[in-house]
Length: 449
Image (tube, rainbow, N blue to C red; front, side):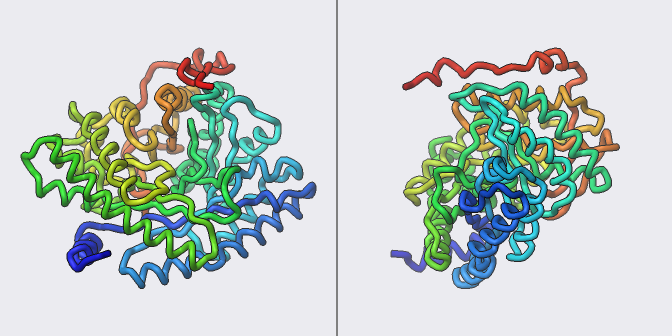
């Protein structure tokens, strides 16, 4: 039973601490849209998305008004398009159909322009990857992802090398918009099939026909709660985060259950991730600083992030039986005002961020680098991040933006993408390393059958 105090606490969270439901994402299976004709496949994809998610935006707005909880994004994820278009070919028409459908139903983004190449790359998956520069420069709401490694398969270094080149081509294709196309592409290791967050969302092959996945948020709520236990030991810090994460997750569970009933869909998961925004007071970095760090990037940052990630999960799994997605804490640089400030003052480097990704939800997210960064360096950054995920049996990812024509300063994207400071990469070459190709074998602990 919900009591009066819980209601008042939730109102305060929304009013003063930036509590929101970051996204309600409908996953849609497109297997029944497959045909041997590219135009027919594209039309069937459009029809399926519009008929399935036509009321998603309206439903989210009704629930937001009913419960007084802001729902920031309404999104759709679909079956990996590399599979949907394998028989017919013609990936660009499918991407255009997805973009038109997203605009027709009024959602923010549609994810699933995806290839899964962790162990090998078929010709149809290569075709989708090669289409990424055109697709991400000519569509507005389509998001893409490529899975290049997993704990079971190892790391496909041929795919890693190719993605370094593709990212540079996307950067150049959207040069006139500060290489914004790169903000809509994620390169994964151990990609999950029920992630509601963009740009990496896709509806996995084992999912239902229509699924509702909800992503919560609330860094400001956690920060505010920790202010009440300043000076206490880390046991008290962990306990406070757990209790607060429980309350936040219950809000997400409620929205998910109501959306499922109203849309006639299946319940997927509640993603427990703390996703920051550029707004002051809505920062994961500020939570870590509240634990006692002068600034994020100082020694102790990785330990603080590990505590936060674990405590969020422990509190969240008590609030929902279906925790999933990525679940933990995001550290996207451009989307977190505290991270931006830490980069500006020299406390946070790319190398320190990489260390932090060993214990956070995803990886190197929304990182802007110089537009003249070599493809081999981009590929090596992806390989390093994939290695962290593969060896530690966790999801890691890279969303990196080599900003064409810029070598320093800031890049303004607006909205949730925020402002990206251009970060320095190593001046030393990784070209011969990337040139080797082949596959880095799976770690020994992957052999569990």
